[in-house]
Image 1 (cartoon, one colour):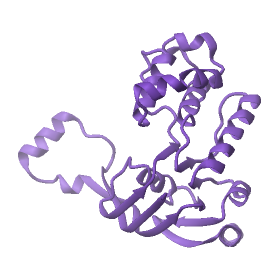
Image 2: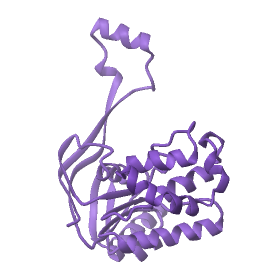
Image 3: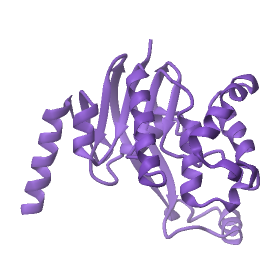
Length: 251
């Protein structure tokens, strides 16, 4: 059964103040053994998250920029392990938020279909069974014979989208609305996304588009400063968020 559970989950990063440090400075500071802690800052994008999402739910996540929405999805997808607490996932996951992940730009489109497919858990046999359908969906034609370094940004997105949506997962994770190519392809991509949302046992969607969240989601989480501020029926939480946004703008 598809299910997601976070128990007292927190995530923190150590980032250097003022940007990158050169190797020379790094070695010198290491030899001196002092001043290093003062050069680093701890960032806490997620704080004490307790969450349970079960089969059949369509959950949206909203919040201002920097609230922790996309970070939450990356923890869900297993890209970031929690620093504290426990993450439990039951079911296969397909994520749609980093469409260029796993691409090799010196390899052809055909080769990248296989590379990316393997990263998604496909076997050589299963990806070969899908490769022609993926290629047809991209509408890239002879460009698939060329290395990705010659692709436009839109062509890379098309390829990544076609591969990412070739599986029918139990858990489907989406970050923001897709913009892939021309209007005709965007409509085609939207239909594919709708099909995946209808088929998946559990969906988690991040968006700034309140109408999209209201249309697809039955439950919404409102993230604020790395915490869940509200968790409830989609229409209720969206209305609360919009009302607070209006009050802040008026002030």
